[in-house]
Image (tube, rainbow, N blue to C red; front, top):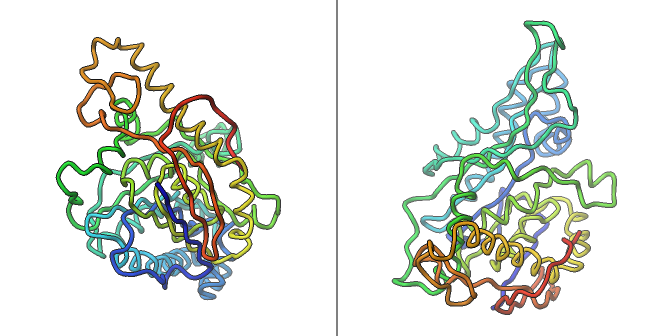
Length: 351
């Protein structure tokens, strides 16, 4: 099996992609009203900077989301019918003109996608702890002017049109199956086992401009909402975590990023990716074997065809994992070759 991963330096409001050419979007945009993104938004629309300087939070919020709206319109164009868009976003808290307020980014993005005709599916909350050990802010230990910290983010899930259709008994679809117990954990609307991640960047300036999500988040979403042979798009590519996850999951990908320094730094993240790929797959199989031991193999009805394990459902029998064998750089990105995974050990993650 082979996958291709294209990287573009450019504005995601103008994607050089054909209509209906990607099956899944996994991304995390810059969050409006978060100070680390002020400069980025102001570069795209100077009126945002002027509104912030004037203390007009509502105007800055609206103008920042108007910038993002241009990207969402492009996603509607390039997604196939039945394609899924997963948008990771956090709400913002900000004090402007001596007024503290929450700016509900997840609400505004949901409205934008619905206006484009997307169906809103149940979203996912995951906990991203704040740096401070304090669980409240404001007036401290006395009422009534304290307020909670924001320690969660939303993964908003949208579908373009109805469910995707596949050819009957599609081999690639059934090989892309996940284990029954993975389904139960991954498709919960509350993820408590995914945490924030450190920025794998040497440059302080790049680190300040990065809001990378943890590898587990795009890896799960890619396995949940795509199949082998699909292509995954991240229009806010950043440090390339979505591309890394797509590589490990055996899907092709395409990324768009305004700052070419992120693209140039990505090759460093691929050191040891072959071993990392095997470690991720080894962990999944080990976790499944522990599940089998816990419930008892006699309680599971089927034998997997490609692994010496029992599984609960018929849909899991043809599950096939693929490990990265080689990654080659090309003019436009990377090509990855795979072999069917056979477990024999684990390794440390790259980057």
